Image 1 (tube, rainbow, N blue to C red):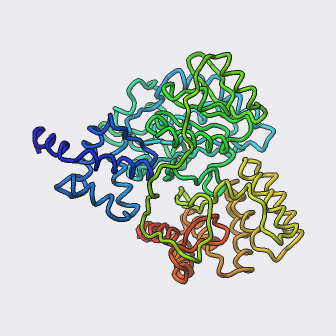
Image 2 (cartoon, one colour; image 1 turned 180 degrees about the vertical axis):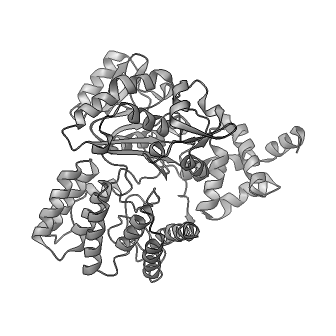
Image 3 (cartoon, rainbow, N blue to C red; image 1 turned 135 degrees about the vertical axis):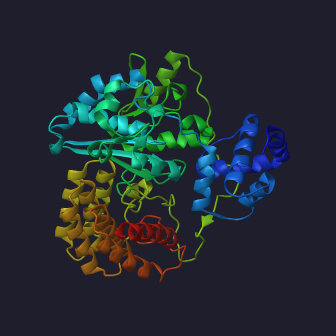
Length: 500
């Protein structure tokens, strides 16, 4: 298609249709295409149409709006809407600060706190940022075998996540990168192709996560108790509402004293007013400081002279995006934040709001302890959470929920054998516990046990087939049976491929 016909197609998408498409994309992904960016949106929709086998971008756009779309279609669309241009050690001043100051300080502070270090690269694209963090930690952390390191890398584009997991890059990814990085951390597998060394690749967990969804922080999808979150050049694409709500969730994801780093163009005293801002050379950090009062922050605005941008908290007058196979069900109970995600282990997700709610009427002492354990675990205090689970079990040894939460915490601590034992106790008490079967499948899959994983996934699917697609699963805090079935079927397919 030549440029003239391409431009004709772009103009052929009416402005009112572009407006509707922009609303749809914002609701589904948080990405914001304002009216001034409609030309860019039209171009991207045209490319998406052609890339997904449609000749007419107008008809394609109508098809997006006319009915529910599945996750595969949405994932493909996102690939055309986002830009994943990055390289290793992008922003030299930032990585110098990380290497010389912030990471050494975090390491020193964690030495007497179980030696857990948790970092999240949100919007990781093709993986250069999280791998850069892994390279730094591999370089500066002594006695690595005594540490429990989590580097979580998430993105909304599943295609580039698969490329990131492979860890193979061209010379273009090393522009403006110190020479020692490529020489010491990569293997030249063929001309212009370099593969990251396995011990560094294994430090990073890549997983799909849509930042616009209210599904984090959560212990079970690995987004809680973070010491450092990097989310650079992502928030600037969000609408003000999504920007504000994402920052609010990041605040809850951080452990006390944890840090958030955004790009310079995303810095705002108002939108990050819950944080304490710190400055190191040319780098601005936001630190979680729950002791900072609202009055302190207002005083900061008065002194800085910055006029806060008012962010509307009202919901837009548009219906939520519905993705197949979800459907409403009278059996479903309301849940704050549908839990829609997978991870490296493709674990289920519990919403943070559920951790903070009061236990249901009629709860006993064990329920109260489990509620406290969830709060502790959500804040990254895993040892304390584990102790509360044990205390709950001393109150009621026949209750599956303490064993299940205990298993999730143990898995987070990389104590897979103990987690497996706890999950088996769950199934002894409740053989139809769907998430226990699912979690055992994930552990087996992570440890290379394809046959065992396949067996657990088959049990999970058998139980899910008895549920309505919209039914909320117990202890999932909002995960529907339909969504979990979709995840398990995908994993089962991948697992069968690995078995071959």
